[in-house]
Length: 140
Image 1: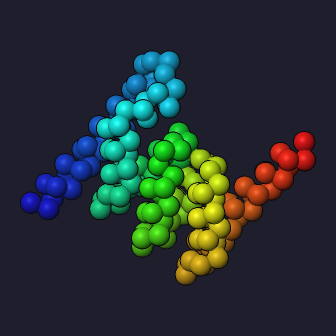
Image 2: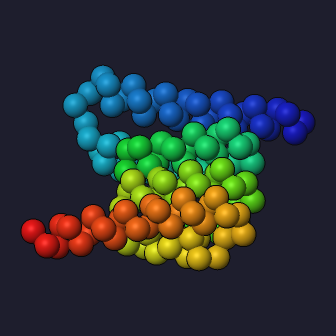
C-alpha cells in the first residue's frame, strides 16, 4: 500500500513537470501563464512537500529554475522542517534564484542557525551574493 502511494505521488509529480515543460516548449506562454492554473501550483506545492526525496528535490529545483514566486512561502515552510542538508541547500538555492526578500531572509536565517557547517557556509554565500547584487544595482 505504501509503495503504491509513493509511486502514485511520483507519477503525479512527473506528469506535472512533463506537462509544464511541454506547455513551455509547445506554446509561447510565459511561466506565469502556466502557474495561474491552480492545479499546477497545488501539484508543485505537493511535490515540494512530498515524502519522496526525489520528487521533493525535482519540485524544489523546478520552482527555482523557473522562478515561481507563488511557492516562496511553501519553500520557506519546507526549509524549516527539512531534515536532509542537501535538500535545505537546494531550497536555499531556489530561493536565491527567485530573489524575493522574504525568501532571502529565510536563507539568511539558515546561514545563522543551521547545525550543518556546509549548509551554513553555502547559505551565507548565497545571501552575501544577493546583498552584493542589491548594492551594485542600487549604486547604478
